[in-house]
Image (cartoon, rainbow, N blue to C red; front, top):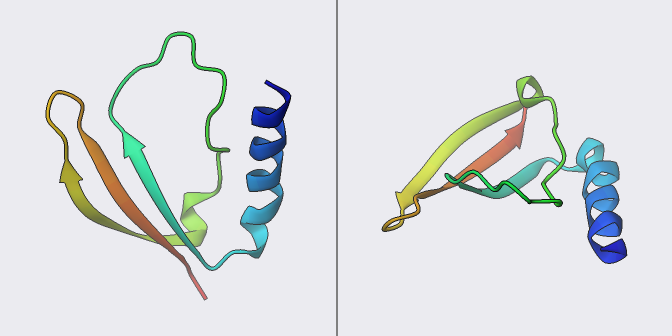
Length: 68
């Protein structure tokens, strides 16, 4: 649990310094989930939706590039 918190905080603190992010978004509701990627201002990024795949559970690979 502590390691999950450390990862969350690391990602949250790094977002202002990144120019590109590759994020896999999974289309499922997790009732008891306790670790998520931090929210970020998507207006600061161009969003390119890559491939949508999966069988029963769909997922999307999304590419974010910081706007200049």
